[in-house]
Amino acid sequence: MSKASHWENIYKNKSPNEVSWTEEIPSTSIKFFKDFNIDKNSPIIDIGGGESKFVDFLVEEGYNNISILDISENALIKVKQRLGVKAKNIKWIVSDINTFKPDTRYKIWHDRALFHFLTSKKEINRYIKNVGKYAENVIIGTFSKSGPNKCSGLPVTQYDQYSLENCFKKKSLSLSRSEYIDHNTPFNTIQNFIFCSFSSK
Image (cartoon, one colour):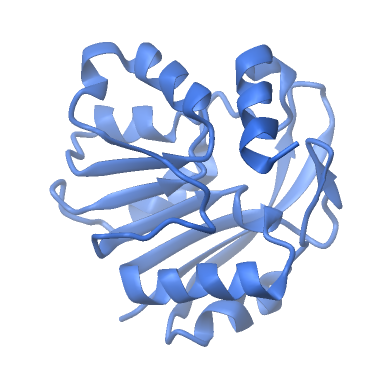
């Protein structure tokens, strides 16, 4: 099964309370995002947005230049339905991150739980190259070295603050904040994440 088919199947057949990554309120992402205090018109992208409610927060706060990327069209359709008329001004991008070619430099590049699915040096380096070229500020949330080594049946790459910092400093992005977070899944299990934010300033 291709990666796209894998994720389309999940978002077609499972509800949010049946997948481990669901957050009713993406509080850590919101906290890190607020650090940057950006203008409401600034371009923002949520990478691997899935059914995340991070976009709901952005819309409610009045941000109006939002892009959401996910490999699963089913996921994005569900979010559009949830947002209703509020979805019309959002740019919806159905794409594998490995083939994504940005056409905008984003003020904020947010990624909670996609980066760790990149397991080859080629994939990781391609991602970091895009970030270096197309992002001014970056928020990454990924499984820590105390977190799972698989998710949704797929292998992942685990990180700590130092390994994430080493990835992004290659593109002159400096660490702004880091924090280890215990995510409580809908199944009442704990997954440990490392969140880091980086800035090109």
